[in-house]
Image (cartoon, rainbow, N blue to C red; front, top):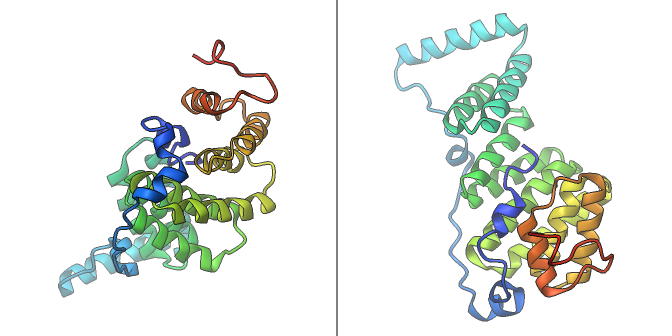
Length: 242
């Protein structure tokens, strides 16, 4: 789930000069943001009849008995949701998260997992809403900060709003302070720096990420960065990145 929005995937279509911050500001159109509530982003169908309520209560009691507590049951369903999400079974993952939420609506992992699913579906407003909800309960969580920053990167690519790019940078820098050796944070800072036209920084963050995870960087990103600036360390060039 680490790369739930693959950074290379964000970049693969449009890594070109026309997508850099300078040109985007000239042509940006900021869409109106929808007003969301928790009910909009946690799609758990509430029972409509006494019979449905009784059936739901029975299932909750069975799970409580099976797992010894509602908290443990919720943790189990989140784990299963993550597994099915990795298998690209999004509907199943959402169903499992619904069960997890019913068992324990205070389980922050439920909201984080929903946020990642919405990010994968490119529903960035929903992703940001629910991830910020999770962050309120765990403000020093570097993975949550990175997930939120990733949603901003995705929304920037979709809407070309430079405010999203700036907010992504801010959150990634906060995450880096908390987890300086995390490859994913450094790689996304490299992508952010590319769009900011800070190519030296992009190379620096890219090399840091590769020292931590040799497989993290996509060739499309490295090639695009080479078009803007040659690798200061001389490791990559147009001949060996094909």
